[in-house]
Image 1 (cartoon, rainbow, N blue to C red):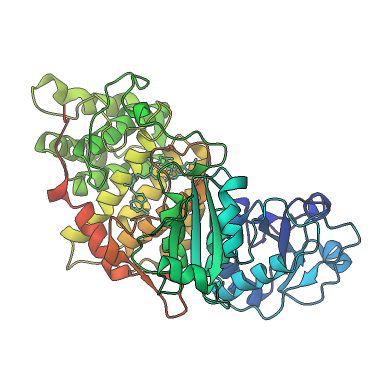
Image 2: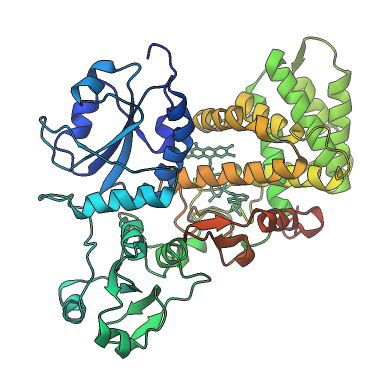
Length: 517
Ligand code: FAD
């Protein structure tokens, strides 16, 4: 890259095209590809880029059938010229199995509305010439006759039928949202399929039914009859898993593959044991890889401990320790602090009974079904959320430092968090967005939205515990009032409700003390 000014990175779920990869991406691909041709200097493109990124997050489950790519024409003029591009941004659709003669077809009429963009892409998928992308499920409506013979030719456990008007896209969107999941097929049924509509007593359009061999059906219970609610509920039916992932066995949780016995816990609550464990691992293990703190690392350390001393809602023995660590650090006015000196202060109270931070790490809400899943990173997120909520609650009247906790968290992650790739992603997000945080409540919701972005990126990844799938959190079951739909049918977060939920979920007086050492 000459200027490095490209608007997208791989972590946006958008394939960044270059002269080196453009042919392999667009020619003879098994999936259709939507390409945005832009110029990084074009203000309109910069303005459009968050929309394109949201679209990529929104339709990432569709990837095996159709995915998004982008190319910066400011840096790759020849490629863009070869594809006949003269204005930016231009979006073109490339069929699967395109030849090198293909110029793609313009997608016109798009705007900043995700729903419009999705529908334009679906229109192209429906008009796709043969051969269609093999991963693309049928998007046309199913007839009663096909339903009757469905289970003769399919072995899936669930057939989800979405009853809707012919102009609706909900059924097609949900079909694509479930594309990467095993054991469930989704088909749309038009309202005009009268015999079936009356057989099942369908009166609401859209509505979703699970249809079983033999002709029985049950209505899928959702809070709102809309795409995201259907997709969320279907992806979580018992027995439905991502392709290639083993079905989670409940015995995984109890067999002794994690050395320690499984601790029963309530997954809608926060445990102090996880917070203390994260703290202990962070101070005793993660920080110990830095022998001497100086410069930015020293400031990051001081900032982190200061925020912990102020806001960690721990037992007195722990908060006293954090306060003494903080005062000791503040008194170190040299250019360097060694980890061994810090460790001495940290371990000092251990000689006095019931004081200090227990060295034992004991995960509860952050237990994983395998030793390499969840645990510390889960504890770190939980700790960070608790800190933003504590700051919000204790400083209601003083909003002079709305970014205090987030900056400390960002600098800790940047300097010390062991997963370096995680750190890079997180710091990139924080650089882009922290400036917008103007209030302490804003800091709470900022961390929530960024954590959800990470969840979105990691859904289905190897690091996902099959027993704890990555979701856009909190789920409709956990917080029904957090979810709503916009007039155009798109999912919306009710941000005031989410804030209230976060503040109560992570509140110090609701932390559970079970399993503490
Ligand atoms: P976690 O995502 O760790 O969440 C812990 C708990 O927080 C959940 O159980 C839930 O109760 C709650 N929660 C979930 N979502 C939210 C939300 N939006 N707001 C508030 N609370 C929520 N892993 C990678 O593979 N690649 C990465 O780039 C990466 N980056 C990371 C960056 C940071 C700063 C951190 C702390 C971790 C990162 N990880 C990354 C690890 C990954 O995010 C998870 O922590 C890990 O996979 C364990 O997941 P989990 O299922 O325990 O839930």
